[in-house]
Image (cartoon, rainbow, N blue to C red; front, side):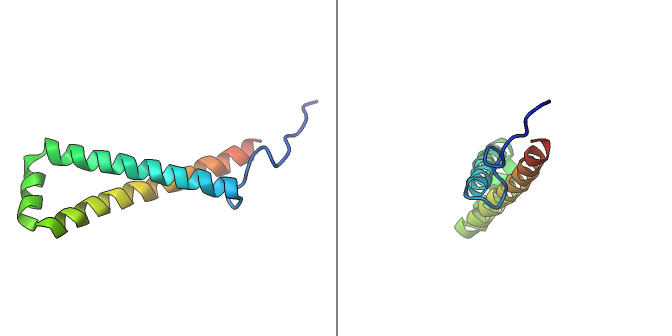
Length: 89
């Protein structure tokens, strides 16, 4: 018979450890979003030209939107991973 794991070994989403894990997922998503945005600007001259004509504010809005989108997506994926990990243990 297998022994059950204690709840302390698999932190839930509402614990401080779960919140830190969720924040790290969001930060990784933001980093990937920033890298993707830079790659998109460098690889697609049309995007760079649009941002050039839009000015500094357009560039900030574009980068902010991409980074926020990736961060939210990674955070939601982190929620799924944390909840799935808790069900398996």
